Length: 82
Image 1 (spheres, rainbow, N blue to C red):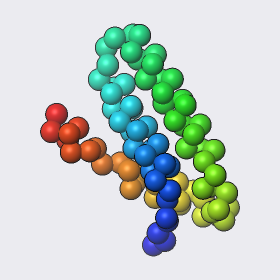
Image 2 (spheres, rainbow, N blue to C red):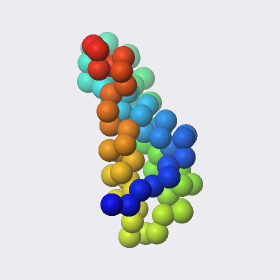
Image 3 (cartoon, one colour):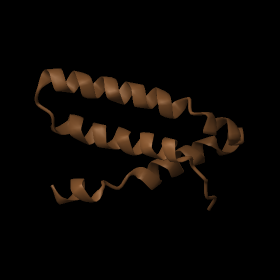
């Protein structure tokens, strides 16, 4: 299995995306859901256009993307306690 050296800002953006997604799933206030959806859109663009992806050979980009998602999927300790 290949390992990837993801930059900290890319890891943080993906973690924040998952946190925002989880919050959106629980939110009932329509104005807050709008904010969270916009946050997800902004983060999606930031993640997809990150300069790091230009350093990955084309054939390995999908695997690197999945590795990023797997590495950042686990909820943080505070979220896990809820």
